[in-house]
Figure 1 (cartoon, rainbow, N blue to C red):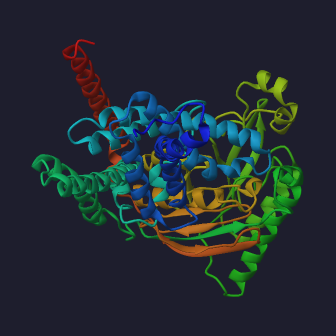
Figure 2: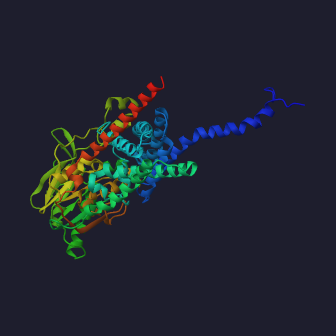
Figure 3: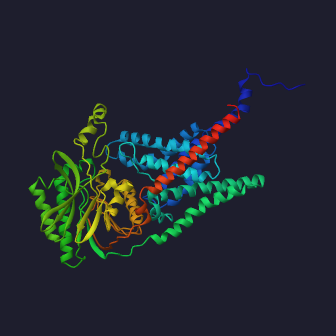
Amino acid sequence: MTATAPSIDEPDQLEPQLAPASRRARLLRLWPAATAALAGVLLYVSFPPRTLWWLALPAFGLFGWVLRGRSWKAGLGLGYLFGLGFLLPLLVWTGVEVGSGPWLALVAVEAVFIALVGVGIAAVSKLPGWPLWAAAVWIAGEAARARVPFRGFPWGKIAFGQADGVFLPLAALGGTPVLGFAVVLCGFGLYEIVRQVIEWRRTGVVPRIAAVVAALSVAVPVVGALAARTLVSDKAENGTATVALIQGNVPRAGLDFNAQRQAVLNYHARETLRLAADVKAGKVARPDFVLWPENSSDVDPFADPDAAAVIEGAAQAVGVPISVGGVVQRDGKLYNEQILWDPAKGPTDTYDKRQVQPFGEYLPLRSLLEHINKNWTTMVHQDFSRGSKPGVFTMDGAKVGLATCYEAAFDWAVRDTVTHGAQMISVPSNNATFDRSEMTYQQLAMSRIRAVEHSRTVTVPVTSGVSAIIMPDGRITQKTGMFVADHLVQKVPLRSSKTPATELGILPEMLLVLVAAGGLGWAIGAGMRGRRAGGV
């Protein structure tokens, strides 16, 4: 008797034989997508407030694994999934008060950049020494994301997740691009080492050059970071200054804090009076100057005599200059302004925020948004205008550079305060809109990176917290809680030397973009030659 194949009319006999194979095939098709999304989540977990910076390495190792040798279409899709896994949880704070719509729209747009990076990494992954080219492609993607659309959105730069990591000193060598490049290169290099070990165990052969390149992809970033520690110092070069930070708090969190403008001003004046009392009682040292946060006086003191009187009283009580965060109307334009208020002379200098936040401080495409949701246009009823000059206040002889809140995310906005003479940096901020979300800690980590990048003390006075004092080596020496009134007083070093990152500015980033372009050009050329050779 001969066996016969099951008839197609006998599904019960056929299904047990095909179902396991079908399930396996579906799983094999899904694992790259699932791995890409998981790798993105892993990268998110490496960011503050957690101190798991090292998770960025396996995140990029997994990303390299799923992209290596893939087509451009697969790279696009897998890159987008990686971007969603990373950015959806990282940026959830953007929807705290305005709902999920803007949050999801922002993530959907920003993930496109990472999708395009995925295409590039998939292309260069077929080249010799691919970790180098792939890491440069990632930094090129960050460079683009920091500039467009609407003047860019650098949130989520890999460097900003490394404030507690061993690679941090590289910020002083080449800024956020070099720091981020080192982390990504090391992650891809670790994957390449694992891949080659598996290949060696399978075949007993590994190309020597490929093995050397893989080892260098890990060793060079680590050794470079250790060597760059010599660039990090908190030594006072121009003496010291005793600085005080005021966190006045807000009556309640959320967007409606703007409706409580007079109360917020009064809170910051009251906390300054407490500081003055503590100084008089000998509990804290007398500061040389005082720093208030962004939006500490949303009542325009140039137009409202009562607001001016409140600030004047606080300045005279403490007896030293105060940098006040105000909202000022001038010549029909609205400015987010820092005002240097002297206890004897009144307002003597101003700095207008230059990098204003889209959809928060001004509305791009306002006429279009009015048709979609009028609530958005009423929340930003008038666009803020941009300042044009770097902010450096001379406060009791110290040169204090100013980068207001959102500006801390932009390399140029912090750097040019130092190139214009800043001996320390202040990042006055207002995070009350975002409640107790991770946004505060993400932004605080940026200021820690900036401290090392430019070898400057960085102070972060915030309306509702977390306010902090950061040494030039990135250490936080004092900080407040959230949604409490408090003040910090500390003697900090003043420094005038410039790090290589400060001196070089945009050059390291542009060099890495050129490396990425070279790798992509090589990959495209190799692909075209391969198709011609195959007669395609």
